[in-house]
Length: 515
Image 1 (cartoon, rainbow, N blue to C red):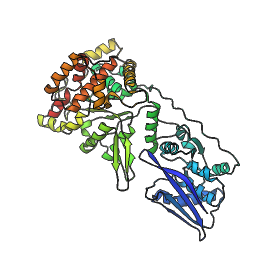
Image 2 (tube, rainbow, N blue to C red; image 1 turned 120 degrees about the vertical axis):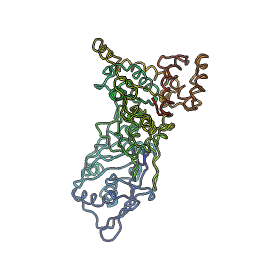
Image 3 (cartoon, one colour; image 1 turned 180 degrees about the vertical axis):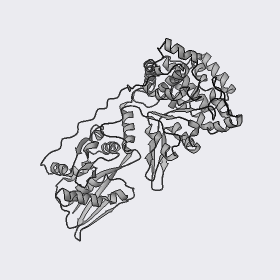
Image 4 (cartoon, helix red, strand yellow; image 1 turned 30 degrees about the horizontal axis):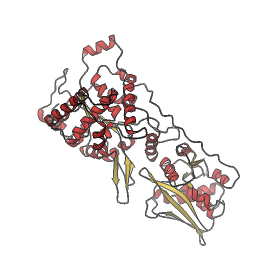
């Protein structure tokens, strides 16, 4: 007897349908799995046989052959346990499912030895892929049901044990479909607020511009000046995720095994890896490609503190994702593409001791040491960072004034301006688009960055004086466009360009090795 169960496996953030073909033939009891299975799938023979036995079902005295098609696609993980068990039950005529039902249903889940069904990775992208492939329902572990139910139009059945599934298929006790999951997408309300940061008005303004237009930003300043405090509070002024963005982010966390049924991603991610992280940990990798920190920060913030302490090779790999918003990982068997459209916030000290240019403490580094320290940052990488801000130590007068006048610029005030700029961009690009000022193409820049005569004259003056590349020129226009959006202005004026120039003035000094 032969039968076919539809399952799937994630590759990158895409799902590939897999036919689990089960054949029972005459012969001694044997159990073979073919079709490029990994070790976890090969061990499914023992898990499935034991789970069936403990559910009171004896394997038929037949030769069991399981083929995972297509045979040239590498499969990994334990999610094929449940479809293999269901295929054996169907082939042995222990359950009777119509061919139409099996064709329209995707099945996945890991079996415990007692027949209970454990959660698996990658359910959300698999559910999305099943819906796009025209499937009508999906059977998943109960713990993954809410995750799969994010995909509207797909009937989701969450099962907690093999016995429950058998009873459902035999019509003895029906399972109820999982109701659609509704995400509560809102601005995070945490304990952090920009009002906690004394002074640093220019840095707060720069972060507001970064949040409004999705501009990458670099802080450079001495230890204790507030770089980390500022970066940690950036999520409080970021606009909420859209539904499409939340599904994208949740899919990545599902593949990584970092998503649970009670913790779907409803807020923009904030990832802050340590500078000792490997290149694979930062950008992704492994024999079976897995997303790295830059993909886990998709649609959110990637904070790299002690920027120059990261391995140079790892930093240089950031250049492609910063430009195109995705990372490609190629392996001998296959390649995977992971989204990586993140807002980069980097922070570094101006020299090895950290006090070059500090008004309170003297620097002990030589000019050669400072140059060697900053040479770890390549010009092409710096060119991809839109905003560069010098963060100075807070003077004593500002601390005294903060105690006398505790009303500092708050996250709520900054968020109001961000909302205005976001509304301008949505009106310009469309409500459902993921295009922001920082990601405009050259043709869009020409169309969207209309300037007054005074602004155009200033741009022409600084183009040659600063020796701007075309990328630098376009970034200057993008920043000016965001500043104009914060004021709800349709045209870029001269003072918008002047402020934008302030955030590009560190380009040449950093490349020369001085600050």
